[in-house]
Length: 424
Image (cartoon, rainbow, N blue to C red; front, side, top):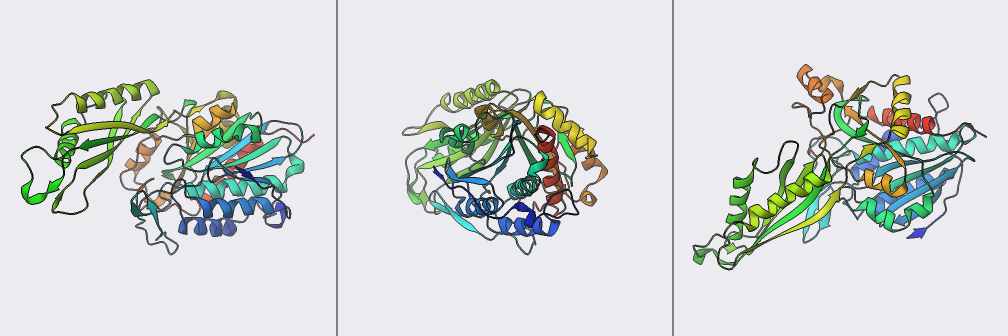
């Protein structure tokens, strides 16, 4: 971990004096277009981290780089008061963008043995702009609040490893005892609309690899024994929709095998996402996966391996933090709806909050033009479900409404000011 103190002019040079202390919408949009055009995979966020670290440094934040990989931590002290953490994620996804945006991503990066397309299909670029916008406003108004703010830009959220890596690299020593951690996430809701939930907000999850191994060879002389590809396909067909109890979800997100038609692949790997309300229920589902694989007869020379690649703990909103944030958003007339049940989304933000000893406030903010939603879709999103007619997170066609940028920054700023102390 290298630590580089930031220096430079005050944030007052970029803040719109006629607005709520935030940079103008045009400035936020410029930041967003740059980040959106240059996404980076988990663990490879060098450019993204450098651009944002430099920006925070010019506003007078004390910046620490390469915390837990490419993580960035920026600190600003305004005297006695609570410590508030603003968290956003640096990484994109291995998804080829299919929008018509003039600044769409056409980037590719190396992932293991393959080169893959990369895009910000989950909206992390929106989160980064919101955190930087709030950071600019807080730096410009330091005389109007008391306490300490830490902006934590986390790498590798999509692989479930970034929060743990930052904590293992001394994040708690850098930030000190933290009182509140604030984070928002874009969602397929009308722009600016918020869904929130006291207590558990997201699901527990496991990222699991399931590998079928066997004999490879020439396609013309393959044996009668099932090949790894056949075994993998049969397993997916056999267990799809049959494993897990109420509230548990198993999704096959990827299947990888072979590289050409005339060679029988000697391995086929599935990547599974297991999700449930609790970590214990996820482990129960994992045991069912293991039994379904190892309990079946294995062909001669065939075997199977199951391995956990990432663990997501549920994100649980703390009453002492989420209550004031909820009230701050409602007071500011942000349209806010309570989710009836935890979202099926997973996020390692809960791990980060627990590791820092901070109360968590985590909410979803809509990032899609309201005109795109039918009445039926609006009913779905208010119930915590995905709309059918609007591209949501992880879709190659996900294209956030630019109006979400100042609104998301405003929400983070309102939340931070609601948690910080009065000056002096």
